[in-house]
Amino acid sequence: MSAQTQLAADEKPWRRAGEKPFIRINRLTKKFGEFVAVDDVSLDVYQSELFCLLGGSGSGKSTLLRMLAGFETPTSGTIEIDGQDMANIPSHDRPTNMMFQSYALFPHMSVEQNIAYGLKRDGVASSEVSDRVADMLSLVQMSDFGKRKPDQLSGGQRQRVALARSLIKRPKLLLLDEPLGALDKKLREETQFELIKIQESLGITFIVVTHDQEEAMTLATRIGVMNYGEIVQVGEPPEIYEYPTSRFVADFIGSVNMFEGRVKEDDKDYVRIASDEAGTDIHVGHGVSCAPDQKLWFAIRPEKLELRRKRPDGDFNILKGMVEDVAYMGNLSVFRIKLDSGKIVKATQSNRVRRDDEAISWDEEVYLTWDETAGVVLQS
Image 1 (cartoon, rainbow, N blue to C red):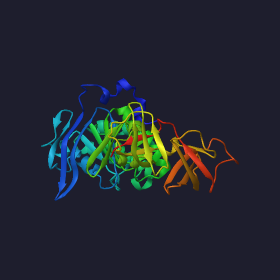
Image 2 (image 1 turned 180 degrees about the vertical axis):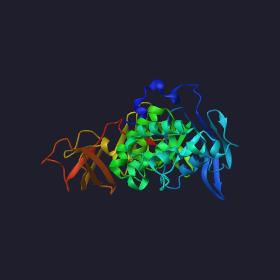
Image 3 (image 1 turned 135 degrees about the horizontal axis):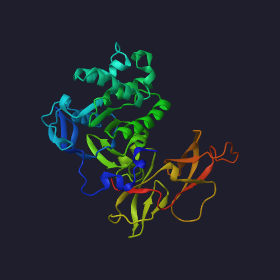
Image 4 (image 1 turned 90 degrees about the vertical axis):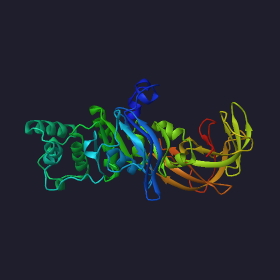
């Protein structure tokens, strides 16, 4: 369950009219010479959100995070945190802390000393330091490891120590740059849920940078998808996955089949798209604001396709092809099907029984069909 699904709709501040953002980024740009790393970005993030900036390498997400932290100076634009303009506030005076992918733990210090470092530099009394370190160790489930050095810890344990050190000064905003990137897949998945629990228990606003789509979908209250320095879509995880607003977002988030076509019929209740790639008319069960004969793209996820040996009834939303590959993934099987047009389509089926001797396999002629509401029409 992602962080956003644990909030009732009326508890989501981004859905409430007039709600004041905790972080307000307005027309923020960062140039390195002629290269534009962040391009005129505006974004509102709300109190206690776990917001993910998602994008590939070079998309500008880490540069945006570093400007929030005060490590980079914007070329233009403004950043406000809790109503305060950050323009002239140096990094060490901002109500933020940052956790790096490398964790940056001091190897010669114990876990307790690493966590306490920031408080001691600020001159906090020793008794208070001890209490707060103990609380943090308990929060990240590391109470039995306080005397160990970083090289005596696993990757997941080092990640928890780094998180505790980042949180102990009680920042208003915690910035996390690929925080789980150094962990193996299974440990990363387990740690994602721990991170959500910690964030919820403290109520601190988190902004997480990641290139991992599954990680963003699991962690985030909302996701901002970045490409070439721009935020191309912001939304809750189901919205980003089910209702992408561009081909880039549809293709970047998860797996998708994309068919190019042109408007054949346009009605207020439906649109029909003629597609040579699909070899069938595509019927969409809602109207689309478009021009006659306009080029469109129809995107549909592999799990939305129904795989059959016999042709279903009807004259639209029916693909015919040959199974080229089948990948058994345990919980599901992935089929790569070559259509008569030469286009490769992916379909997935859940493996609900342990053994299925009648399952569709290689080199079979098959048909694919879907419900008229299963896909999304994209105009760019």
